[in-house]
Image (cartoon, rainbow, N blue to C red; front, side, top):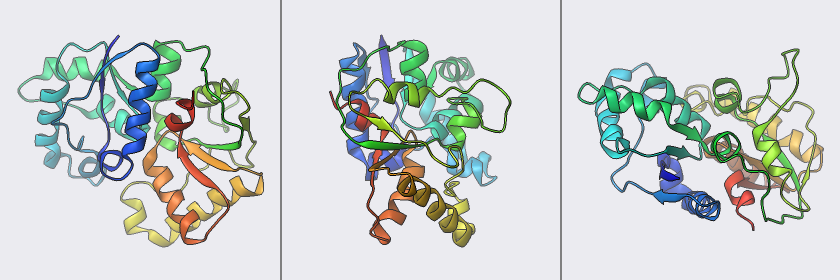
Length: 245
């Protein structure tokens, strides 16, 4: 498949190893991956803060970068992927914007729904706790919400269970928000920090050696809490774990 890789700003600037792991994983699974070099922010921070009109140039640039005929556009972030799927528009190339919206996938969504991966040649001998981010869970439906009376499922869990020797731990509150919330952590920093502490403590209390998830923004928030408090857990993006083979 011809795949375009979309990396969120914070992955590009602060966590390039996540982008590299995503690229390597997709190539191992047989994809021909292109990384449009002129890509920048998707415009989500402005839109989330009520200034979607200021994201106009971001939208046009995104369409210019990803408007080619790709089979899929893959992003290792549920929040950025959801923003593009729901909010991307273009005054000049709306037809291409519609095409992009219909071909945008979060990484684990792409692996399970499009590539239909049923085995991964990896080994990761650690106890792992999965943080299911709100955008991925409630927006992209990557996993079932615990408040619904319905059969449980989780696309990230399904993939993690394919990795040899990886033990997925159970959490007391498996789909609780970490408190990051984009600009929420700036305007309500005390509440955000408390929510993050609760989320990390749930993982540690249940024996996690590694805390993982599909959104590096949430993991960045949780890793800050881990580092400041010198807590005994490592934070890794799910792409880094799935790429272990």
